[in-house]
Length: 619
Image (tube, rainbow, N blue to C red; front, side):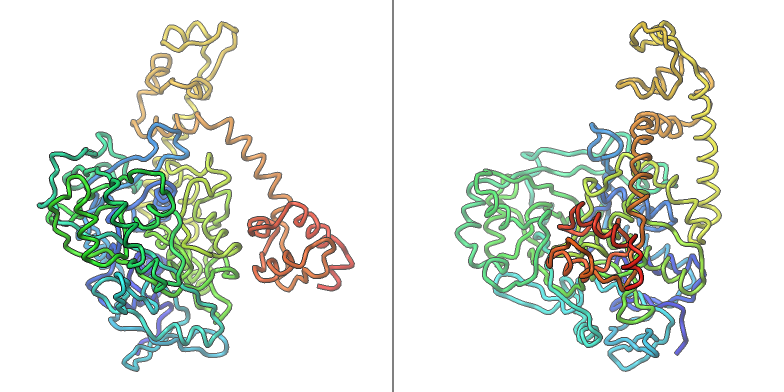
């Protein structure tokens, strides 16, 4: 069997992104998956992006990843979430056609030089403390210098519907039963997590006439920087709500739910609760919103977002039909909970390499995350790590001040995952700087220097950046008096102070169109360039302040902590603090800061200890 540079195990979102990135680096790569036809499948909701998640997709795209491109090709309803709020917390999202998305991913992968192997990985090969490939269930050995494990929900996956339990990675697909055992023998600490999905409904049996309609945006915001407009017909979603009758049915039958009957030990996602959780945790809430999302243009399958469940199938029919518009609906597939193995990511390197075996990388839900976007971003990070290890390429620096990917990786590797991790804008301290609209400015240059960004992508970015720089220069050179501004409809106090274009755009309600009356040169640039310049002007004062905060913080938080640092020698640390820090093994004060429960006083004590010549002799 051929020897590869990297084997990617799993063909989901993490695996697809990882194998494509490996190929962009020119690595000799193989993808091992249970079913070739399912590569790129959307296991749960047919949507990409959203709040926080849309930022991740844009960052993946800025590094020439494939998720944003596939989402735009398959998008049947584009919406910019939080449109009424500032650009820093807006999230591009699209409802996708499941089949078109899968086909788009497979088409993009087909353009690359990779080997696809169909089979179940049952074990890892090793030599000298490093990974040496994988063993398939049929006994075949495939050799490689590195392995990226992206097992999703398949490792000892179990589907729960009421009191029924079925071994599966997702509905209709076999679980991966054998790899967890060997990982545990290497010292991997596995836990159990769970997630869920709602029943699928026949759209032809829904009474759409009585439902509220949610249309697509008139001015769609795309997920990829390279896309200009939707590729396929746009559709609307329906909106309905649960009611007291729905809640009564669920409350009366909670003991029959797999999640409430003791069958499931795994922790579920707090931010995406089942309908049983919603009814139990929010007893005073009389209804819960449900989005009826079409799964494609050529299917009648509807995804009722908001009512995931593990109740018995007969009860699912009963409570679904208690909902307005769904009184006669046909349930095509029952909802279910799925429980699976994950490995707590505390202690993984920033490249997501484990210390179990050299060259073994973990990405996606195996690290305790939930969501397509979080998985894809990890697949990309792991592939960049492999390229660094094998080819010595320049790193792409992911940290909390430069990317949402950096926020996620730091959270996972320093804090771990006690529940399924999901990205939100609120997780980023520097979110005014880390906007979805400027992800390419933050990451594409680094990606080009590292080798994962193609020449065509970099050329498009360079052209955009040159135009943006020239547009911003015109704005900087403007000098407008209050009286001149008033002639253009911009109300300013008569303070006699002249302002440039950036200062004018920072005034609420002022647009590029307003100040174009004062500077005709602004007509020279496309709408998107002017819109980008306006976004940056809106935040320029805050970003400058944030930059100073980042620099001040970096002076101390950038201090490295040796891997074998002895926390028990640090005066003033409690036993609990010593235990947490010894387990997490943060690589810097910044990483230590993000560990739950670590106080500023503890950070100060560690810093003093690091600077102490006496302690340095000990370590």
